[in-house]
Image (cartoon, rainbow over all chains, first blue to last red; front, top):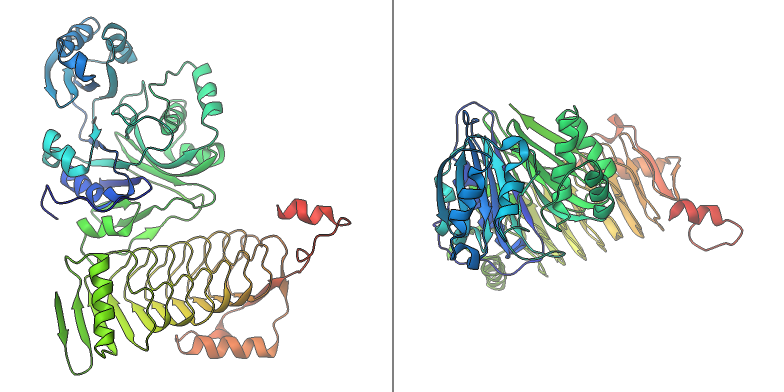
Length: 314
Length: 238
């Protein structure tokens, strides 16, 4: 692995996605692995970087992350977020880090916590709620984000990451990946591609009562999969259905508290590879990212074929 | 930069070097007369060993990224690992051997030479080939051979959907299962000369052509010219 603070690579044109899954019950160095892979893929997307990192579920505890605009953060915003959360649940702890307020709370008020905070605090965006999951994301390269959030200190069972080149929605933290599948705790997605039937799928999901936080097409994948899982689909069934129902180009990783699933579109337009041994699975848009963290020459990465889905669950 | 010249092989250690530094070093070594070069630690870097016009053997010890060995005219490139998409794109002449798997778009638009993949390829292998030979010991992905114009593809494993879609000319041999032929691709009988070609081509890769049951795929030539009397052909093709 390289040293933090190294120079970024040249500009590129496309997003990069990465993931790691430890097959055993022991936690592994998920944070540093994701950081190094995202930095390797920085040239694929220079706008922002984000991670969803998982560990064993916390008893009676949810971790929440809220993005605040600078003007709100400087004007008592963090305290207002804590007060708003306290209206619906007990806040155990909180800290302001970078642009994020990180809350430790007793429950998510059956999915009402995020709405409660956003309704009461102007400009607040809740982008992570989970008992196992914590999403960390901000603008800049993996090493730049690392300086503020120390993601490399995180251990966990699995995680996904993304380095973004914005094409169709704003460059800000809310529109950065991973996207939390609101309001389902512990489900997130990272995506490389474009979902061309986004508006149609979004309307269908909104008619079912789901709420979207952004105008980003990738968010619809997270909510779509979470909705199917909620209604009894297995991960395999949900992934297979997504290849049929999502139109456009995509390679995406969906993460839940149990593991990671992935799918590739029918034209195989966006790259996605995985390497696997008895202990772990590493996934990335390019083999150089896999090689950056796994130097074992005997580990042979495989590229997913068109319409292929895979999943690793514990 | 660590390059070690021995009696026969020049070794270039790519650890810590950028793509440009590696390619410049290769060109410099070739100019200095090296005829056998071994590159160590390529660690998946993109665009290595490209635009070379020389009689030289390059051995890349490890996986490489996208667009390796593209636009070459003459070199013999061996990759001991995987490669990303766009391998040997637009190659004019020479030879590329991959002792692993290859990504999408392998040997797109080559005009000559030979590309051999020991494992599988991703989607769109051999599309728009204008000559040369692509041999895949494993299987090929979606839409391989699309709009092929000349040359030969030999696939020892299976082919995903859309094989040979809209091909103009050229020949595809496939030994395994074809999920679905593409528009206007048709199966034809194998001739004795086809069998001889398969035997000769595969022998050097220690593959017994007679142990495989090859099918021959060529263009049905119904898309060569538009005919108002056959609109259904175009509807299906498009």
